[in-house]
Image (tube, rainbow, N blue to C red; front, side, top):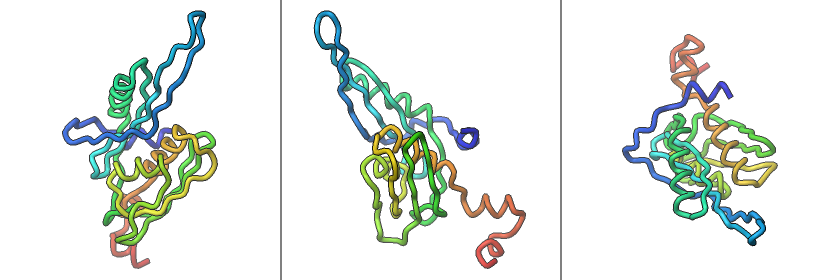
Length: 172
């Protein structure tokens, strides 16, 4: 996970939108009966390439969501977005959750399943083809999607790494 650290950014708190991915009611059986609490998974982003995820647990729904948002703001990464889509195809993995994201032409929209859709939309990707393989657990799917987005490199970064011009990168 050393790859994520170079893309981490500080929360600007300005126009971060939040989206609830999953809310899970969990029960703990005690001597006095069942005690219910809630676990919330939330993604936050600005719609311009910044995205983060967080988990919050509390006895109250709104409190668990607030905790998840605070956690998500601590885990923000920057995603390169090129003409409303991603620069290249990428695979991501977390636990048993595997995802594949592919760039798509203008007008395609976000073609992705539940948890992936939330992450990609909040990141600001408008056209993408995505497939979740393996685990359908929203925790692992969200983390695998963020892993794939963190591995993306912009064309400018690739050109700089190879010490060639942008024209040479695209023309061979």
